Length: 137
Image (cartoon, rainbow, N blue to C red):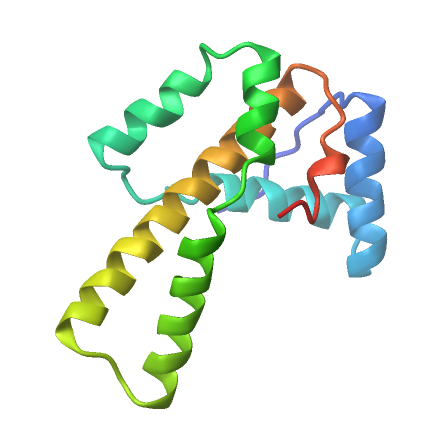
């Protein structure tokens, strides 16, 4: 299929972001933008109705509440148990009860990460600098 030319007017900050990404990846700006467009084309897995509702409800939150969600962290006990079960699984395997617990904790962790990322994305759309969230755990 032949390529189609598109003129795209980017805000300065977005242009600078992709220009820097292209430089780090040693690609042209066009190649970097094409990579981003291709990534956006990929259909994500369909979310469960509960998770889709939770994501959609984020849009109704005010900025302060979104910052709380974006800065939230998995409870320490759950994070420790998830890590311990992952290590045990690699070393010696898990009982069926432990497998079930691991599955439950992994799903909770994925839900947490998705909601946190969605909240950060909404904050960015609202014009906030979310760079302070990078590495925040």
